[in-house]
Length: 537
Image 1 (spheres, helix red, strand yellow):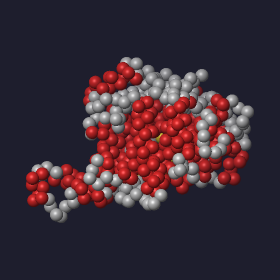
Image 2 (image 1 turned 180 degrees about the horizontal axis):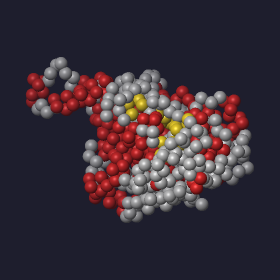
Image 3 (image 1 turned 30 degrees about the vertical axis):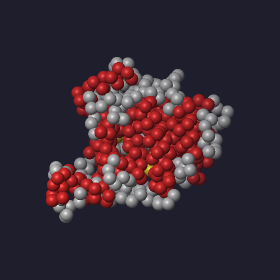
């Protein structure tokens, strides 16, 4: 992994400081080199933070930096071949990993180890160092600590949503041989931590707009925008638990929607990993699609967008927009090389949280009868579509026709292998109808959220498991070694990620306790996580 000059210097300084710390306390004065900064100086001046904050934030969605591809490799395994493909956003052009394709639900040992490490150690290592500097050290910085807290939860809620129970509350000491926390307890901790961080940053923003020396590659230290992101994340997590704990959901959702800081509700406040704090980021999807030439448009998203005559189709993909790859098929020896590719540039930003997602979260909250601080399910739903069009550079003049359309998802005709052609399983249109059942309204909200948050397959997968929507094209095969039943597009499929072999070796006692308590004694991929309780008919 390569770093920018700033990060390299900061890490080198960190190593120097670590080596200097071997001096004994009695000889501290005579062993201190006046030409070198000590730990207290580095903490005060934000030098060490310059190494750790970007490293933490890059793990939210694995995002490469100029000259490196490690994060792109992480992204390909943990997102592109797993959640992004399971949700029909994309698919491999040839599924070349014969007999161990993640898209066919086979969990390779090495890839599974790496995916778990991405969601745990790669997040906690830089976060622990920031905690030491900004929270536990002599130069406490509540604002930098709050940014780190929100960044950590942005990453760790994805891990919890993938696995259920995870190591969390005991990791701060630096050891990873620790007990697992129930997902319910982890979520409740998320809410409390977010509440504290949001209030800290909002209060600070009233007098000082920018957190100095934050080394923040999302908002460049903009305190109010961080408070809005924190509220938006709180709303996302609150709606996630709607079916398992309605009171918990309502409490935190309404707190987020009525907080004085506000939410991400316009394109200027969207959270992205981009060129900030002296660091140039590279889009990992671009690397997978172009440098590796490994991914193509998925059939499910094609069916929706083609059927709806959705103008975002040409913003998301390039090439033959009538050629897509069906879900969960065996190796095909390049039959789909001519299918459309994701349209993304090398230095395109990596989206963390869009304004359109917030609107759809509010639409569901309004549907559930929550206080959304104004608006109706219809108004929030239509605003979500409008915002998504703006986010993708589409004229608002195109929105009206889309909002009134009664078009349905299209038949998927496989241009390479006709046997994989399929009829859509979804029957919802884009037009809102107050006469629809609440369930149909929910399906419309989640389907449009799915289209808006592309290419975030992790979030789409979590929402699909929670609600059963959108109704995707059925998976064709399963070669799963962890019990996965091929989905009909609405239920079954992968319900959680298996715990890795590395944990069975390094943290066996605590992992077995978690498997016994939260997975019925079997480390499979078919156990529902805590919030996945809604019946799927």
